[in-house]
Image 1 (cartoon, one colour):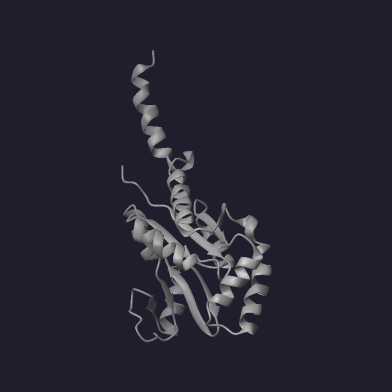
Image 2: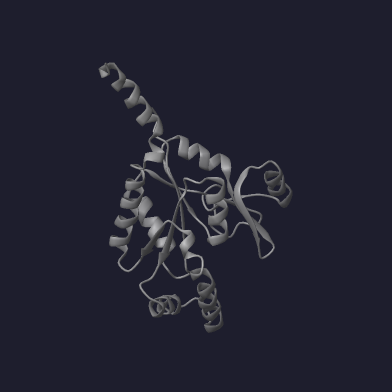
Length: 208
């Protein structure tokens, strides 16, 4: 029986270190695949089709919406962003665990359509650490940092919608924690129904 992969959605505050966490997770373990989103925005310098994004025209993207070819999508600053269903299904069917790094609204949509999705929320140990990390980036103005912190206040209200809450204090510890969560998910009864059925059928030879 082929092992089906697990769909893992990772969300968290801006500055929580989600990107670094996912990059290290994929580097250490070869069973993970990072989902590549589709977008209507133009490629930036150095970006490659199929690596950073699947770049689509607005017409092509709207055709994907009409054809139910996206797991979730949203319009942000005038451009569409979404998760192609075919890519995710292909990876899951091949036994790879697919990671989607998306925000709370998208995570809710994915969970609604795929109830066995594992939702994981990443956070720094406290609010002051979050503010420090945003400031240490050195790429954003004080106004942008304040807006991101304000957004974090809103996002914190939706954490209970997630299955796991992970503190990203030490990167190595956090990566191993996330990997253990995924490994434990494989043992859920809901993911082993076919195997359970097979064992029950095999055991019938011992019944009187």
